[in-house]
Image (cartoon, rainbow, N blue to C red; front, side, top):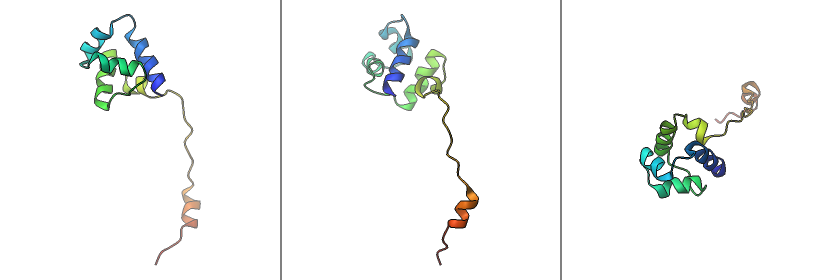
Length: 86
């Protein structure tokens, strides 16, 4: 996942320098470099600032976009197999 985030950050930054981007976001250049090199994932508060800077959602940048299947859970069968303690 770190690699995907790194790739997205590099693509979003485009031709703008790391220095300019880091300054605009309010983080150090070395922090941005670590995010772009897949060495670290930013804290939530930094994710919000990065998303705001690039005018994207945190979800778009930091989470995968694939649909996931939900596990189905049958409450009726769960209730019938539950043992009472008493």
